[in-house]
Image (cartoon, rainbow, N blue to C red; front, side, top):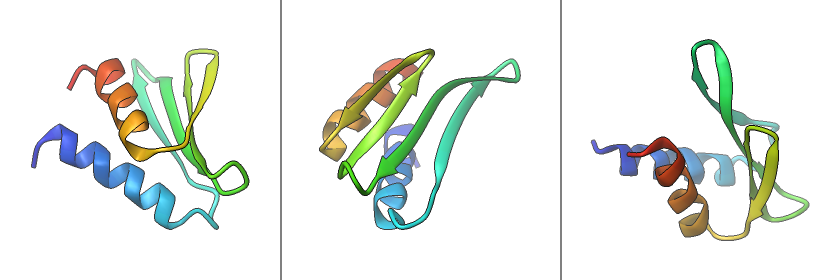
Length: 72
């Protein structure tokens, strides 16, 4: 399974279980670099990279950002 497919699965899972409070974290050297969650209220993915938080309404935009940041 490629990284792209794994990231897509993560995003789909967050969206599917939007009633739950789930945050996927990506860490480097025991420090969170990237946090991803799905906000049911905003109907969007919320991605925090360092101290910057952005919302993405569609899965493709969120996936593109993750791929770029994680260089998959």
